[in-house]
Length: 73
Image 1 (tube, rainbow, N blue to C red):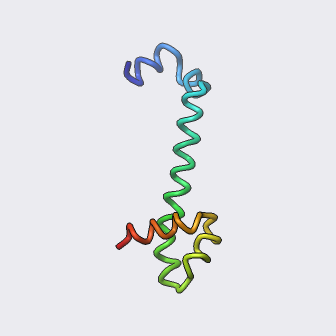
Image 2: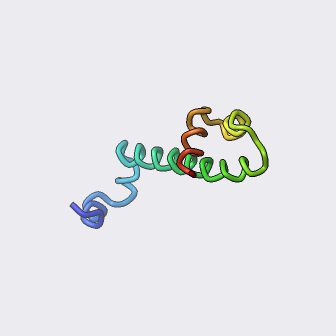
Image 3: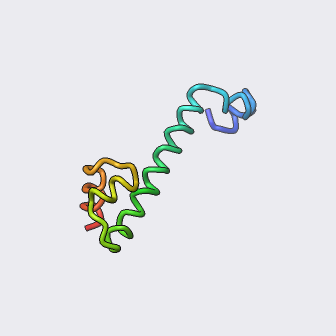
């Protein structure tokens, strides 16, 4: 079913209250936060911060920072 058909059938407010919709929104928010942090890594590197400092500042694992740097290159 399309989104419009589901909205008509259940109403948008009812859909937003479902566990599935709430889980999707939570996942999207978490992914968005991580992506935002990953975009800052390059700027911090240019300013001379170490990988460990960047991980601490952004509350990420060192491995996540290292992987992001590898993807930049």
